[in-house]
Image (cartoon, helix red, strand yellow):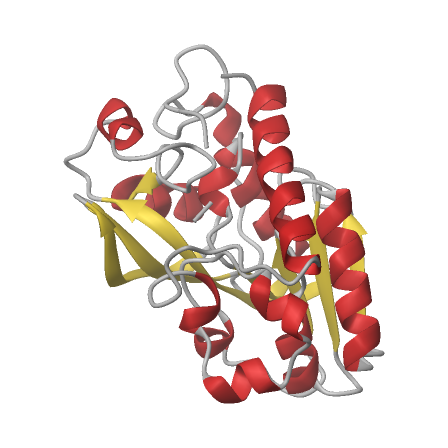
Length: 269
């Protein structure tokens, strides 16, 4: 699979999910372990129904992000806006929650949900997480929910996270992670790319990728299993308050990238 084909497969999958949610249908077939079932009843009550229905993640990054009043938060792959809207409430009127998504249908749904929620400290940007359209050192907290595994170029994602975070800023995301024993081919056997499985990094790949761009205090904490040797995990890291030289990950061979030999299959959560 190429980077373009991965982006197109993901865009198609989530465009369909957005349209389904807007029509009042649930996007997830496993509400207890995926999507809306991972948010508390109180959190769901805070949001428009379509934002909850459009949730397709593997965890609840708001529960681990430890957001504070006045912070600027960036949600990578923001979908229908559930995590952006929850973040906006927690950072308050002096803070800002920004969602980034490449799918027009999801962006339209998120804008509608934000208007329905009366959220004024939010914005949604179109773009890919491999090329974040924001200035360097502009974000306090990066969150995402089961999105990094969908990226066609993981090294670029890590570089971009490190770039946009302010010195002392932090990352708190949820994602699907593979046990180190599984090869890329074995991951692909357990599920599709747009099903959040085939494109998942291993624990060691995730850790080395984040550390390679200068992030510190990296931790990966499994929360629940999703397939044989594959788990949902909380991933945290911090950008040092004093800048450190970044490593050019484009030359690394240990992180999967799109192109010939990519582990992708066809078909998130």
